[in-house]
Length: 322
Ligand SMILES: CC(C)(COP(=O)([O-])OP(=O)([O-])OC[C@H]1O[C@@H](n2cnc3c(N)ncnc32)[C@H](O)[C@@H]1OP(=O)([O-])[O-])[C@@H](O)C(=O)NCCC(=O)NCCSC(=O)C[C@@](C)(O)CC(=O)[O-]
Image (cartoon, rainbow, N blue to C red; front, side, top):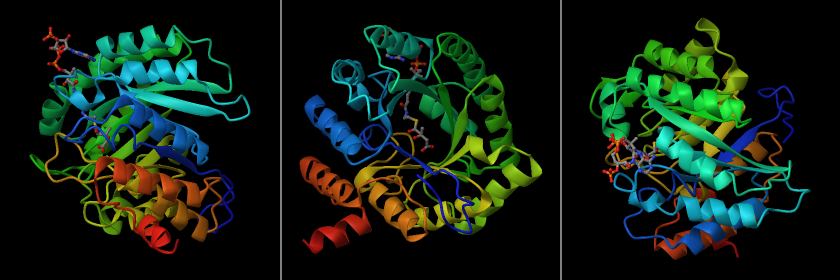
């Protein structure tokens, strides 16, 4: 994914597709496991190379992710061709989740081109941390440290998340210094990248711009280790990606058809749609290597499967032209 734009200084932009995890975790009805697997396979055949495949979380808390072990097992048994390097990732909130991930991964004779990794998820708001993972921010970082240590010892990469980077529905505005402290904590323990979650999509180019510039310029956090994870609740996600791109961020999370919402943030809608992100990046001179037509068809297909409105503007526009 080569970037040829004044914003981009010819560097690589990575898209992390979160539709099969963030996108589906809040669906009310049960999404059949075979539908999730078909979604993941369609996403990879559209050219996406970093795909979140599920969460090893408590099924009492998030029932929709209860079949993650079955998905992991299928993906291990049916790897993509060696010429298609894909990373599947799984959320692990605690040692129990990481142990379940490891038990599944142990069944694998993973070729080097196809790998998996885990993600841990913290918050910059105390109330959201309690509601989402039932512990304080400090307790969550203490809980994550041995997971990261063990994962790195096993050669497994760990991604971090920080939720509620702009404002929390329970605690109000989030202080940028709190975001920076949590990002630093995750990087210090060994996360290779931390994704900045505007969980409820309230961020604007002003607030996101101020935050990312504060993180990169004042707190000296490495831009290459930060990712933008912008929900589109208020229709600001693409323009927020633009300001983050201008600030030097080169990894963006997105969800096909804009699927999603967070079970512990009422009213929050999906991530920026992958179709909209690809169209925006390509239009900005960034090559994504994602087949826009295929991702649009995937967004149309999964929206119909779920009986949902397709939240991608680009997807809707291009489907109308067929
Ligand atoms: C973290 C816990 C587990 C704490 O939940 P807890 O209740 O404090 O856990 P516990 O350790 O006290 O255990 C209670 C029960 O849960 C079970 N349990 C315990 N752990 C697991 C596990 N890993 N897998 C399966 N089962 C588990 C455990 O076995 C036990 O079962 P019981 O004995 O009662 O039958 C819970 O709060 C949880 O699962 N939370 C997950 C919430 C979640 O998935 N949220 C959505 C993802 S975050 C997000 O979407 C934001 C993000 C990342 O996209 C970025 C952004 O947009 O901001």
